[in-house]
Length: 399
Image (cartoon, rainbow, N blue to C red; front, side, top):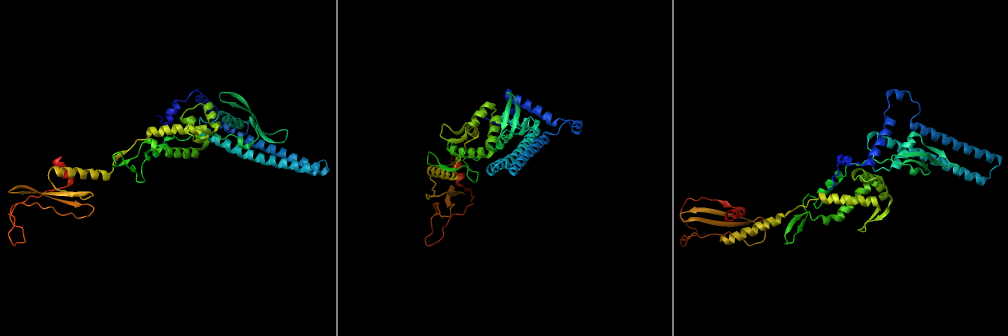
């Protein structure tokens, strides 16, 4: 059973993850492990400063191209149509440059913060991480291609596969760092405890196989659709990056498997459930297994069933002991008075309906004569000791 213990997950890190950690330690030392003297005597600008210099240089080059077009227009060396087309291209380059600058600075800053705080995920693709490191080092730079289009170009070094070429034309393809998500049990465990409970935190009332009311959270299989909905909502909330973290940090899957699962889009599993990609389905299957292993069915008698069984038991005992009980429906409370007389013990039993319906009082004749013409019953004076017994006491006494 998965426990999603981050310490245990760290102990299970494979060789690939150890290589990634080592590469990050090197990058951390390069960026942050500097002495006070190094900070006061810099040989080069910071990487962020270098990137801004690159951006400004590209901007000046674009401005120069625009100025050259204007000069050609004035000299009549270019037609109005070509001039308009070329200037539209210049406007697009300016816009792309601005987008590249904004995205790179944002993503690079987020990566460096995660690196510094130790929150980077093992689910982050190592090509993406290598590109961000290369941008920070100034090895991947902003440039204009031969057609004047803005791009990022250079070489980056994969933590285990070595150098590879980088050519990014669309700013949306600039990598974004992936942070490690919290242990999944902090989200799932409270949900599991609430499965099959009503708004008051009690198991749901249902009729069992004997036709009696019970309080029962039900078999786990009865909650499959509910669990599916909860899991889909949770996975959508953490997003693709959170799923990659779950697979890499909590399940310790290798990079190639995470990559293959993430890129297998529009995936339909064996049950016919549709997912954005196979990585989502993989995460769901694991979470479903975890929830099922943590789920504990709660089953106990319903209070009405307990009361009814008590009433039936009391009636059975009363019948065996020749004690009369009310046959009316409803839950009843019985009291028995036990009197000590010269003739021995004499019991008088009365039944009171807890629902408020009065019951006729049962009187037991002690065998004493009634004087004719008198309205009062004459009973020989004798000291009496009274004791009241409820239904519970009656059951206890005769069981």
